[in-house]
Length: 210
Image (tube, rainbow, N blue to C red):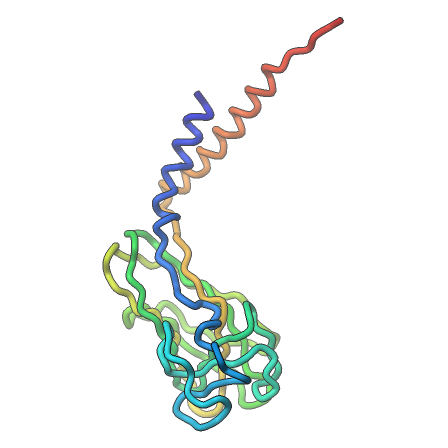
């Protein structure tokens, strides 16, 4: 009985998780396909224009460890995106379920040219936060929760707000479902019932004397 109740409680969370809205190419691997060292849109440097993809063609893509950009190692995979000055990297997603989401990513600052770089993160133009990348390698960042409605489109953007030759690197971008308080309660109850069921089963084990 307890095991069945626990299973029902945990399965109730499955639709929100299985139907999660996702970012495409969050580690910029497809965006960097065929790029030797780096691509820089709008300027004839590196490998030239970046391949068109989920992140559009604005900004640029850098191979992990590129000496031209300070030899920073990617947080995930072989490439990462960049924002220089007021450049923008954006992607439009369609919500697959109505839920609360948070945006997660890692950032780092270029170490061999310019100072600290700042940027905003927006969803459909609404600012979720302002961030300044650091100089010690990639650091995980995240936004607070924001709501999405199934079937609606949402443009997620990293918007550089600094003038001049300062640069942030962006990598490992993803979306995570943020359960409502009632879902958290159900989640905790489900795991509690699983533990209780296991204890009850263990107590049923008898001892046989010869």
